[in-house]
Amino acid sequence: MTMMMERPAAEAEPAERPPRLTAQEMAGKVDVVRTTVKVTVDINTRMRHEAARRGMTVSAWVREAVEAHLPGGPRRPVRALMAAGAGRSTEQDVSGRIDEILAAEWAPHR
Image (cartoon, rainbow, N blue to C red; front, side, top):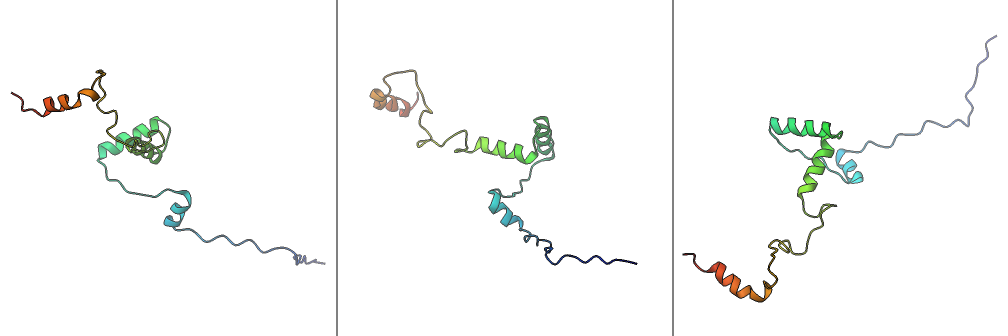
């Protein structure tokens, strides 16, 4: 005698998978975008070697390298005046002598 086992009526159907996101939709959710950068074979080899040496992905290495060169990155806030402090001097009276200093700098050199 063969017994047939019936599936209980209360058993739920498998859950539907959410629809696949496009790359653009995915980028919007994780706040990153994909971009293409053309580099020489030498640069490609060197950056892959450096990323491997540091134990990171090439993408992470490129993000870090680009961020290091952009103003306003997490480690370097943008200054209100980009030139502020660019011409630091050891002289204490520069602001009081600015007209004299500028006249000397702009005078024709002989």
